[in-house]
Image 1 (cartoon, protein in one colour):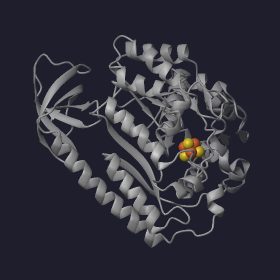
Image 2 (cartoon, helix red, strand yellow):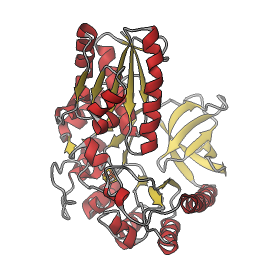
Image 3 (cartoon, protein in one colour):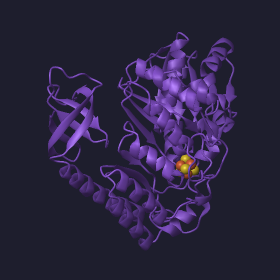
Image 4 (spheres, protein in one colour):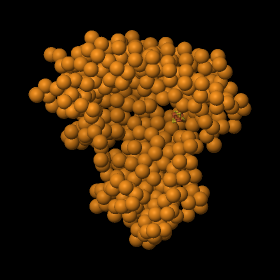
Length: 445
Ligand code: SF4
């Protein structure tokens, strides 16, 4: 069958779609680029924001027209929205043939075959730990052959008061170290040089079921980084997103000492106000967060930081907002995903009093975005004269005479290639010019 997959949401969803496409291709199906030529339409959905759900529902609703023209067309919904809305979604969109929740994605090829054979409607929504290994080692259509996402945990035990993820993705489950190492080795053999480890709380890896951060001296995630660092041919390890409280000295030491772990950390802050952090049910204070950052900065002076921040959380005052703004300047993030809080039905924060008006959220959002632009431009300028080690990706999209690659700190670097250069290798580039988006330089010995 010809299958079209549309993906909404986060990197985990992208990875899930890629694994599902891989499983389907292995079963003899093909992946197509347009809805019109497909026998099967699959929507991999997101529930983090109500808007994302509305968008997906609107899109799937329009597909009714295609089904009228082609009654054999199979339409499926997978991922968070299927899990969150369950069979109510089938009632709302009766032209949908199947739902497959986040814990059952490894069964996608089977459910598809049974629906094609029997033309019944189905919903597979139970939690299943087998999904983790079931989805591993299946890949399809990776745009950058040097780079791969690896899902190492699924679900979340933290219950931040604004977040729907623990309700739709379920309790945290992890793969084991040998299983992840085996998958990465296989990818390296196929040409991958850089990996991004994924999980809702990636630093909770290996703590199956434990709802507390590990004590000092214990970090299965650090153990995993040590094992991955030993893999010959693998050049770089990145990860997203870790929950700050899981950073003990063992993990900080692994990040600081393992040469393949990149010097760029995405560390979600959410708010710089302790009062708001408490209401968010985040289990750290601004001071504790800053202690982690300072420890990392003192061990890794060239470390860059990015984050997630929510503005306009219920009852956020000007003072709370300024605490966030101030902390962002102190950490000196070079990138941030700034979200205007929007209530998510089914979460405690949606019922909180003192929702902040939209105009105030917008104003605060704009202020943080402006700060961010000023900071990242300055930081890029400060890198003029430095030498950056880049993973060579090949000809740059804008000017194929120049090549590009990413530095360990995640900055894009553009340079003039040398004939002996190999895609996937590492090169040292001396930076002589910087813009907001990129660094420009020449190879140095
Ligand atoms: S840590 Fe908090 S924000 Fe992140 S997925 Fe878990 S509940 Fe959601």
